[in-house]
Image (cartoon, rainbow, N blue to C red; front, side):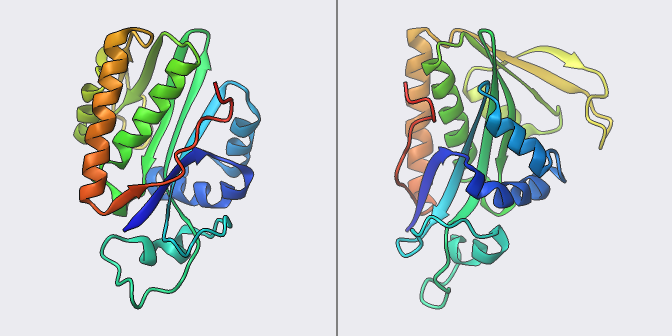
Length: 217
């Protein structure tokens, strides 16, 4: 069983988060960009760390050093004792009453296991606690896995940005989800969390040290 920690990004994980960004997006944000995000009171960054029971030192090693141990297919008897691996990242900006989701990333070797659903749940839960009213994001029309996930959380298409993605020339679909302070949204969040929890458990993950956002309430 590999333990998952969901918590706010700190300076200690910057090297690992830049490496994850490179793997998932080819370098969307630089290290200085993440530093600016950490300094902004309107930016909330959450990470997912994978750790064995022996890897609780708190030091964040580069992903390449810990990936083998934390892979669900790794041989636990022969894998070296490593520290935590950062395998997921989520970020949103709070703009007036809006949560603008800017990043949702899961390491390529760990996708399709419920980690993205857990991250999106955590971002939206935090936005609800901050009394935000709606959430928006952009996504490629070709990214069917992401679209399916966002639709599960009640996002609908609200517009399109032409040729938004420079790497492919694709448009961006603008997705929108309102009613973050309503009871049906709270029920939807609880249902999506239970689905993610069951899927993660089936894939060999166990949630540990589920920490609140850096603002607490």
